[in-house]
Length: 157
Image (cartoon, rainbow, N blue to C red; front, side, top):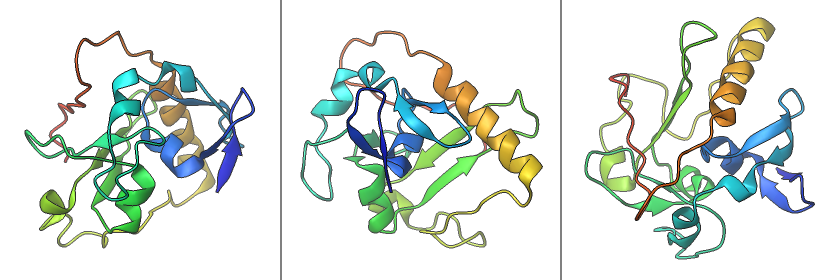
């Protein structure tokens, strides 16, 4: 599904959830999508390893020392392992992990199958997850010299 940005453009909601720099004006409605200009220029320069396009912002594989880039929607369409980890409390960070096809192999065994979205079980946890996501997206990234590499320090992946 597409939603409007604060400057009148259209963006995939799914992709917006996976690009850490962006946010939502109204978290409950997940619109408008904001802070598109905060996306680091190196994200726009990455080419998607699936569609080969440089249109839209890409993310990179969470695998160690892997720089494979892809659109979140292309990774989903190609059954890459993608996981969102919500903290136990409202103040814990929300972390996204997405893996290229090479690093998808063996991920999630014994867990929910790849290409499956799991929603919190009740309205309270859904609201908590949205607040956590909003807080994460509100944090500004410092300027970064050179190519952008997302490194997650959490042992939860």
